[in-house]
Image: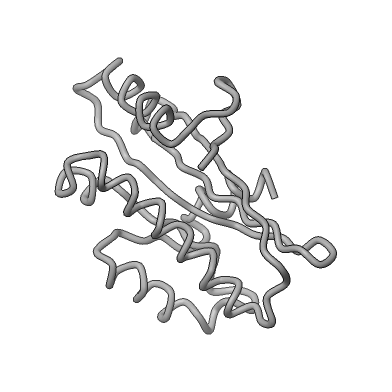
Length: 155
């Protein structure tokens, strides 16, 4: 699993975790939020999925990392959104294996690229339920910046 960093280049997940910890340890008394979001874009016969991992030092900036995978076209928007959520949840579970789970879970959010406007409005309850059912906090548009801004920048 290779991530990209605007400042550090290509990194493994272990190296990303080290960078997260270094960033947090620079100012350990501050409050942090770790946010994961995925966005996708169709190009030809492939769908480009980008998952962003953001560490936000509340009120003092942040860092982000992103990874890309490709899939063949999905038959429906609903299935594509489910895949975006599944990719975000998968990364969240991998992070839990490397951090104190209870501490991380309360500071970790999953951002999903659905909102009250547009075609995804009918799916909000379903995908929010998927994330909450997995035990994570969730944000939708317009508050889902990890998916709708950070990941979107790279699809």
